[in-house]
Amino acid sequence: MTSERPFEDGGALPGRGRRGRFRAPWVWVIVIVAVAGGTYVGTLGNGFAFDDWLVVVINCRTWQNDTLWQLLQHDYWNDLQRDVLYRPVTTVSHVLNYRLSGERPATYRAINIVLHAACCCCLFGLTCAVFGDRRLAGATSVLFAAHALHVEAVAQVVGRAELLAGVLGLLALWVYVVDARQKKGRPTWRYPIAAVLTGLAILSKESAVAVIAVAGFFDLWSVRFGTGGFSRPAADRPADVARGRISSALIGRLVLQRWVGMFLVVLIVLAIRMQVLGMVIQDQGSIPKVDNPIAQASSVGRVLTPVVLLGKYVWLLVWPDPLCHDYSYNALPVCETPLDLRFAWGLLCIVGMVAGGIRSYRRAGGVLWCIVFFLLNYVLVSNTVVLSGTIFAERLMYMPSAAFCWLVAIGVVGAAEGISGRAGSERRGCLVIAPVFALLCTAHVFLTVRRGQVWRSEAGLVASALALTDDSARIHLQAGYCAMNEKDAPTAIRHLKRSLEIMPDFLPAYFQLGRAYLMDGQFEKAIQYLKRFYIQAPDGTGYTTALCIAQAYERLGRREEAKRWLARARELRPTASSAGGR
Image 1 (cartoon, rainbow, N blue to C red):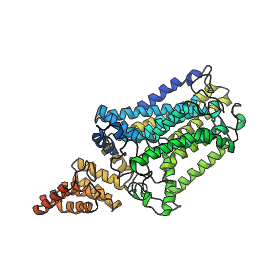
Image 2 (image 1 turned 180 degrees about the horizontal axis):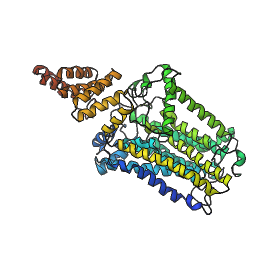
Image 3 (image 1 turned 30 degrees about the horizontal axis):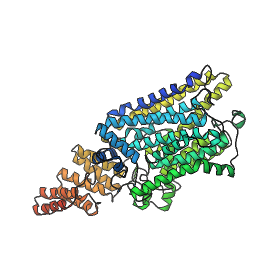
Image 4 (image 1 turned 120 degrees about the vertical axis):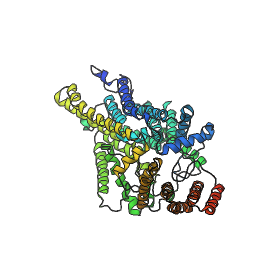
């Protein structure tokens, strides 16, 4: 393997000579930070939304006086009734933020923007280390900074889990790649740093375990392709990049020298997780249908639907508009037949990846790197290996989208080189391709800024989602909740009834519909829906429900029944949040 010095003119990177100043790393870093920060500065005025209230406000109120040791022993949701998640790095980040700035949303979002910019810079460094081309690294990072599919991860405070995992994961890979290119792959002082960063990334968000798989793939990929790059025939590639042969002896050396330590990181994280949560993964049968309908789908649906989801993600990577903050039941219906056009598109995407990977394997390897990086980061959120707590979410593409940005950048830089070669002038290719790439990034900036404004309030998000789909039970629940906040009971009732039409067993909708009828003065109907919820309500939610029922009986003048329900409420322990809302 060739030795690389990613940020030195004496290394393998191009950029020396009369146009080298345009490829200087500090110039690119300034541009990247400006795009990443400038695109999201408009979100600083946004308020808290949805899960921000529980994870950031309510939990941080509860934990603000806890010691660091106590914080490390909390699960992410603080109730163990939702997804079984353990993200202590993210939790500590939220609590420290709360101690410094209280409940001011702007400070949380400012840190998110800083983390996003840092992630883009780490992607620049990783690209330089892997491909040895600052132009490619710059184009990749600028597109990543502007890509509109990242709005949910950056604009929503709880998206910090994605950002921390992204920063720490990409930095770990960057250090690992630089380390792998030293001393013929033998570990240096950088290796333990990469291992520690990987562990912190996984403790920020579980899907960051993909960093270890990507690191292992890099070792094999670099043996064959050295400093990979553009999809050019081998004869046109630089002479200093030679193809290597992957043998069993090589695999043995990699296992002993490079992979054992990274696998040890996984074992340590799993041991910590087991100690805190008492389990490694959540019981797949306990995942609510409203969050992930695949959990209760037929065998055919479980097989076909992940293909549909892949196609949806690919489409949003290509053109991220329109977007939605919630894809729960039944915004993305389960696929029950291979004749579904959505399945055909997803299958076409898979075939395209396989074909592109095979072609790239025979050439320069750049496209192969992109495809495998995407798949390794995507597999744990794809609902194939394990079912996740959500069927689909835009924030889940934060790390996998780096592969798409690489792919676009490879095409852009490759096209510029092709034009320059035919014209006999490097300047000609840049003059032709740069405006096209700038137009693409400008389009993403426009979409990102526009979507960031939608995240300004819950009401705006819900209105945007309703314009996209009328078939989501939870979006109609959220719409009903927002209407009640505006004291608009008739509108709330309409949305909540629609929620129950979509999903008749959706318990939170019964509670909120009972509240809406109570607000509207329809007390008999309020009691009917509140009792339906009370009978099946999860632990810790009966207090508020019993109080509402008592209030309804009081309004009807049925004082004895009101007293009984009030007494029942007093027997129940009050909770920090009501059953159907906050």
